[in-house]
Length: 463
Ligand code: NDP
Image (cartoon, rainbow, N blue to C red; front, side):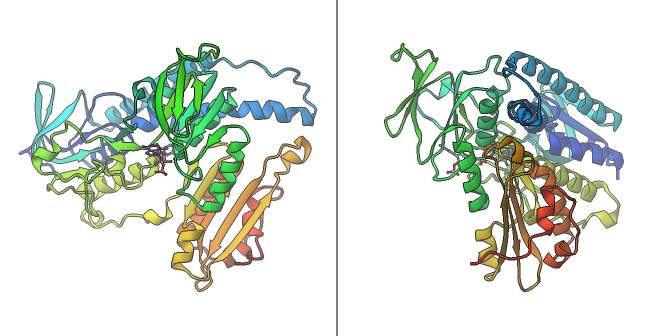
């Protein structure tokens, strides 16, 4: 498999989830592999995404737990105080540890690590600083970056990257957007005690998910955030005018309202990192959003140049990037039987939003299912979790299951509520295995649990 014509068999640009998995898999299969990274090992997920975000959501959940403890006899007295800097320092330490682990994993697998910015200078040529190397196959795994709209005062705002650098908790925070990051970070700010204004241009938060589940989560978020829907930001300025309010910034909305806040966070989507890589000069086609266009083998329009993960903007989730990176490496460097290894179904990728409450989903939404299976059966369960029978908190869980009546296959599972991500992961396995509603009915529940609702749904709701 080795090709002495080139310095490397495989050169990966970007040591995030997709790039690291591809490089390690390729090296384990005997390919002479190198990886270039200019910023941090582990990419977005480890440094400014999934991992630190989840740590912050754990921190935010304690506020609920103190509140709930009283009903169970814990005489907690006053709410303990929260120190943002301690959380940030501990988060930074953990991320540093993970950076080291990623580097060790690569080194241990025999991957050559090159720290610096890589750029393509020819179909098989890469330049990193003063160094020029050649490779038979090149993988672009450069991920994405936050996309902020061009409005007056945008330089005063932060993105999710900036959120993880904040050394001080804003007393009042504005979060802009209605997707994953906006709802997750609004929940974190609020749980940690900030006053939160969530501003979204759409008529519902999380509008790309099942409408009913999104509506349920929107209502729940409205109970602890000031949510402005169908609203956009007109401009941001330093708060000099409104001196009687102690805040750093003044935000003007398109409805004329002015909101004094200490921090404005834009979570208005992400864009592929394809600039200054020399891609277009080589003829690599990018789509309108700047993402690399690839075929079913993750090969770009230039043979030998591949791309996986957020940079192809297909399904921008860490497990998808990992799976794409691994699949590509196996197809390229595995035994001949691996070269045609099929991809998994992109339609059955489960995902979760770690908002408060959590939302998790796999398969079609009700609208998508109705378009495909006209008589789709909808099963639903809405309940107050057992824990809250004592606390009295107005927290509910909503679960939905969609079934194609012809095949009896479960074609969509959606949940909003505590532990949604943990529960729906198991549902994804069942759906991947082609489970029917009868299979769910024949499964005994774990009692008492929220998850058992998914195997005790007996009557579909009326159309
Ligand atoms: P999303 O695509 O989820 O949401 C972007 C939001 O910003 C949408 O509500 C969109 O509104 C709005 N928006 C876009 N452009 C503008 C604009 N110019 N002005 C005002 N609003 C705008 O992106 P995120 O940034 O939240 O996250 C990026 C990706 O990262 C996600 O799609 C997801 O794949 C991944 N991610 C996954 C997580 C997880 O698995 N838990 C967590 C965080 C991120 P509209 O709907 O009207 O277009």
